[in-house]
Structure formats: C-alpha cells, structure tokens
Image 1 (tube, rainbow, N blue to C red):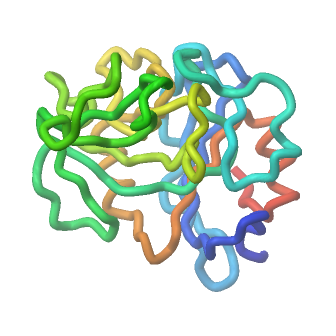
Image 2 (tube, rainbow, N blue to C red; image 1 turned 45 degrees about the vertical axis):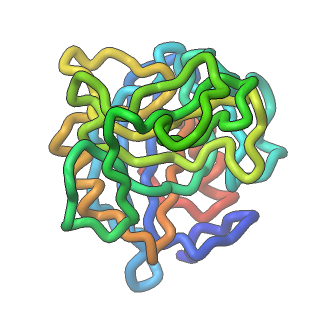
Length: 226
C-alpha cells in the first residue's frame, strides 16, 4: 500500500483518523496509524472522542476542494471541520520534555482570537505584547483541565479566511463527555498517548469526517481501513 496520496503531498507517515456515524453525531472514534514497511500499521484503535455540539462540516484543508460539497464550516456554528488537516504544535499548562513536536506552554496572557473582524483572527497571541484589536477571544490557559494537554489543528490557515472558523484543537474532553464548540476531545490518558506518539518529522495529519465519506476518501487517498 502506498503512503497517503494527498493533492498537496507533505510526506505524511502518521495519520490520526476521526470518524462519526453521520454529519450530526457528536460522538466518534479515533484510530491512529503509522506508515511502516510500506503499510499503515495501527497504533491506537477505536478511541472514544467527542466533536462539535452540532457535528461536522467540511473545511478547507489538504484534500481537494472538489470534496467540499454541502455545508462548509463557519465561525460559531458549533461544528468540527471535516477533511484532511496538518497537525501543528502541541500546547499545555506545564513544561513537557517527552514530545517530538514543537510545544507551546500557555499562560494567562495567551489567547486564540475568534473575532473574524480582527487582523489576528485564528491566531495565537500574547495580549501583553500587542495592542488589542478584537472583541472576542479564547483563553488558552483555562480555569479547568480541558487544555492542560492539547494539539493545534492547522485549520483555516495559509491563507486565513475571516469567518471560516478558528481555534480548532484536539484536547481533553469534559468528564460528562459533552461535545465541544468545534474541537475534537478525548480522555486525558488518550491525548497523552497521542502526544507521545506524534513526531513532526513524520508530518502527522488529522483525517476527520463521517464514516461514509471516509470510505470514499480511503480509495482516493490510499487511507487505511478502520
């Protein structure tokens, strides 16, 4: 089996696959793979995850725009983006030394800007270092444990489109398994295992969509069976 055949090939050898039963289901599963000896080998299987409170919607990513038929993700829709996206830096509340990814330690002044009218929309900023030009933003160092460990999803970047959605992460989910505002969440032990596994030299990506669409993508992009 060949490596993932992206339209924009980045040499991906690590896949994080999140699927749901349909577009509106808020509960899903995560399967993680690494490309070894010319095949996709499972690393984590059928991990329970939670997505946006209103399910999924297509978002621009590494996949071809020809797939983006139907509802597209937009700011404030309560949906997680569907498609194929690079996984970016890790973040968290404390120093981490065991990772093979770039890491951002977040403090109270670190925000993610979700105001679509701000020039800093969908960017991580330190509010002590720039003049405020936004009316809404998300605190990255929260009063709970949800962002204690997390992963930035490179969604709506290069270029950033105002209003297409912002501040998309993978992070710890709430104890009652409630859905997110547009992120993908899982139990603490699972995201720690994922963080240990990810390696920036392997160019990891997130493949996230309903199961029916995944089966179509599987053939088009040489994805593994789940």
